[in-house]
Amino acid sequence: MQTDRSSTAPTLLYARPGIVVTAERFSVGRTSWPVADITQLRTARGPHDRLAVRAVAVSAALIASVGLLLGFTGGLERLTAGAYLTLGAVGLLPLLLVLAGDRWRPPAHELWGRVRGAEVLLFSSDDERQFGQVTRALRRAREGARRADPPGAGPWRPTR
Image (cartoon, rainbow, N blue to C red; front, side, top):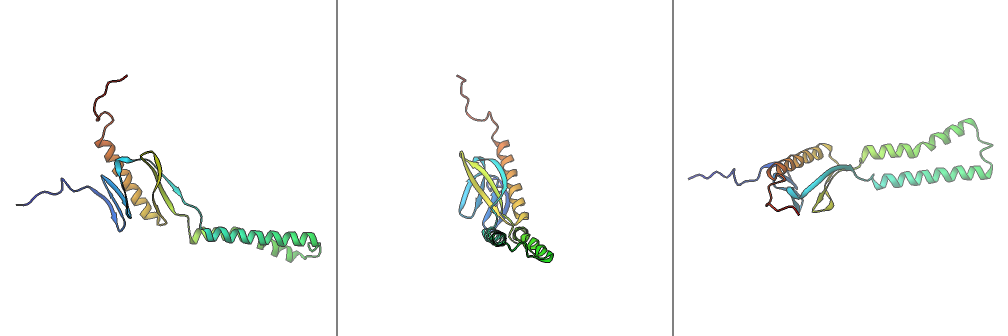
């Protein structure tokens, strides 16, 4: 005799190693939340790479200190036009480091939500495609949870 397990098995919306989204639960690693408890989903970008931020800060400080040193010693009056162009090009180094750092190590995509009143980072990934798939799956699960629990579905209570 065969039994139909489809009625008891949760609806699987997304599954990859370490990430599972069903109609009832959202699991990332060893952490799991009931979908019905997750509200106010929002996406954000994480912080910039620390190494890139440090490289920009150090290069900007070095360039500023060289400019101050040349200004106080009177060295700016003796510089040629080529030296001024070189200083201007070197002044763009922090901007180039910012662009290169964001290109090679972009900030992670983050999915935030409220779980029982607390703001929680639910998922974070630097893979934009995977992040989009997980976000869409969780939104579909939330829509299903809202349809299953209409606002007036709880026990009746008199208004006071």
